[in-house]
Image (tube, rainbow over all chains, first blue to last red; front, side, top):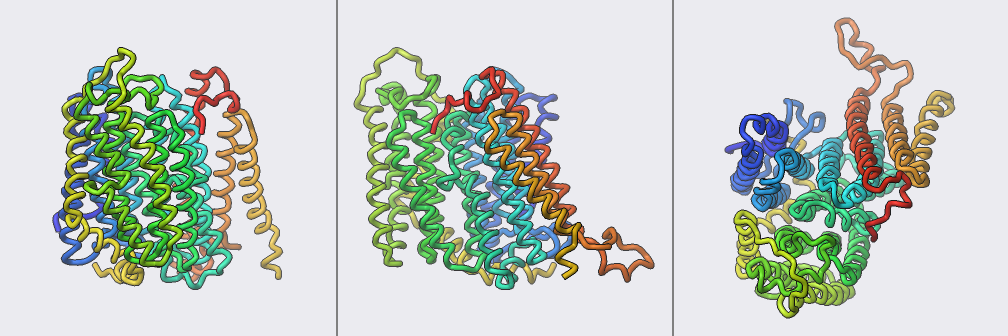
Length: 494
Length: 123
């Protein structure tokens, strides 16, 4: 083993606080260090994934206290896969925003990179931790750095969006604390594996009550329907790459948390139906709302919420095929939505309200960015040569295997709406004339590399889905095997 | 029976729930941004009090092991909720600080603290 999972939390946290010091000596280190750290984390996650596939789950014990007393980190095929995805996206976000505010000012760019590092720390921590209170702390790290990043631009209405986010996040965090306290007062433990083992002892009423508080709290970050009022505002007001970071990293971590609760901690099957119902409502409402948006980033935000609904539906099917489809969707959504946010930001660069009509005729002025946006649009709709096709097919086959015919019908009908609003934008890019003579911004070389990388991944996975299906398969098996998780965490000998 | 009618227990749990309800009421109904932040802060305090109450033990001692004191182990209060509440207080403080700074930003941008007059972003 080359490293240990604790480095995923320790190194970015250290980097976040060391950046201002090195920045005093050498200003460019503020930009370079985060990239090195994220590249290292990605390489580490790949090598640990190789180790895990041979030797089984790594359970890291912190400070010598064995579970269930101490805090532990669990690097299993499932959490490792998500860590790999998140660190890769973190690296892409860094690459895209490497020249962020380079010629403007030193101070804002330093703050931006500090908050970005904290965002990645918190998200990876949520996924790796095996302790619910630790999870609460990481969720708070993510939220607070999220508030900071949202209110980054003082000229926009960003403080309003950030306050909305903060209001929901603060109430959610108290609910999370209440849920943790209900569990602790009944079972006397905070370790997820230990809770999962002792869960049958708990009173049914309190079980439901704590699950409701958990879902309410985590649902805010996971963009579940009635709790996602913050999302469109945050995506429009935050800096462009941060939209990608939210869609690709933070939301994935929150979805992981809710899945871990329902699949591992709680033991009733009704929760799966709850997932399907929540997912369907989220999917339908978000996609229909996206249809009538006139601003590009707002449309992408609602599309992101809708995709999360689809992920919830896939997890709610509850079979191994369903989990496989959900993980495939999470992977694809992270890659494709980042590509769309990255290229979309350049299509409406420097426009005040970022209306969809601003992309008119951009195909001539920004050819590469437009092609990449088009690839992303086609992929997220689920057109065949792109990666999105395979994940949507996996969801539909999983639903068909479980005889959920109505579900298939709803997903297909709503997919038509999705196609309508994405193709509308693509149509404007290529077949409309540019009216006003406004300046277009050519993407910087590092942003272009980041976008092309993501575009290539979309195409490669589209032609060779087998490249990642091995990872996905192992991750799905790992999540479904609850007894194995409990055994591995509780019987660690070190 | 005596256990359930313990006045102290009722008082602590009751005031924790009462604080939470006051905080929620303030956060959800007040129009002034400062009062909303206050409401969130009170809601937080209520939860912290609830956490402390869960770890409370009547006639319990401080959870410190020392020589000649081993037989008192059974009457120690549970230290975990206290450790958790310390963390939660710090986090709550951080959130309140961020909230207040956002309120200042909002006031500079919109020249008002009334939340119903700040509505540039819509659903």
